[in-house]
Length: 474
Ligand code: CA
Image (tube, rainbow, N blue to C red; front, side):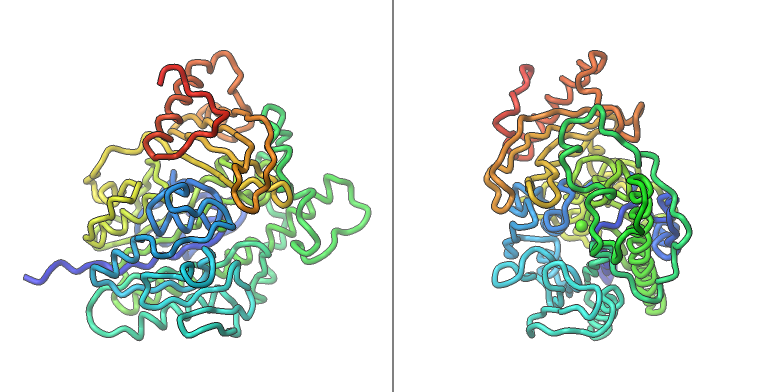
């Protein structure tokens, strides 16, 4: 008997694509018909979260199946030790052919360039949208064209050059729709009609800690003429200028998404034409979420929902029934073990996630997650000014502690502010507009969650900040 065919793996990752800009998630601002096909033919994950909502750390967690404090990639300026075990290095050891094309962004140079891949061809640092530079084992070159299209071209070309029947796994990791939001000219006419505003556009941060007010992420104040490619018209009121900036920002962001959607479609059509679609685990995800005017912001970083939430759509028709919605809590730390389980490869004991492969075939291999631990380490007082914080989110509540201290992380400042807590009841307040940490009726909930957070830190081996008091009941 021949062994059961091992699936191919295609992992399409974008950078900063919020789930509320995807049709399958009910977007009010755009349509993504090709990305939506993955939900129709597979599974939409409604509670997938990033454990550190920032590009570089999330990529390291996806690859290694570990949290930032374990893989060492906690900020934008902490490059990866690429010799760490990843799900890719394990797949390669198990006979998979492996490749990485596109945005790596976990450091360049010896020790940081991709390892564990038969072929890698990556953008430099943040990468360029137009005529990008690519670095491979053969050196650096500039390729004419649009990054989102080129990354797909190079990816498909690698697979087409393979011989033999061994399975393959490829990471197609796009730069789009990351800042500076430069669309392809073919999409220049899209989204010119006024784009609806999010419900929380006018959030005044009245009950929040000081963190939200300090963050330099407001569309009204912190998007530059360079970001928007033009100056606002003269003579507008503060409010009208903010609306003008929102429209200009969203037009370019959504146009960049349109090129992603085209290219997801290309991959689906190509897999179908090869007869490989049914036997391929095909994922579409983004490294974190993004604020699209929510709470008045652009960018990510905060543990609030729009930034915390990762879109994740996955199809594998041979094994996974179509049209499912998975609403359990999963995180970017879980992907590695999940993909290894689909490939029939045992995961590495260092990995800290939970495979959700079994959930998708009606045979969960472990109980659902009770909640998820989050930690944003970066703490700069110059650029985004979003303070360092950590917290615990379960199916109803979210507890956040802004410990407000860079703790000596290189490049993230050495200043401190007093620690501050926030608590949200996501059932009563899904938009997270009322911090109830100090509300007497939430005293018991607050205490229970502080203990839960402390226990999560113990279980995962992370150090609570010295200013966080040990809960009495622990
Ligand atoms: Ca990102």
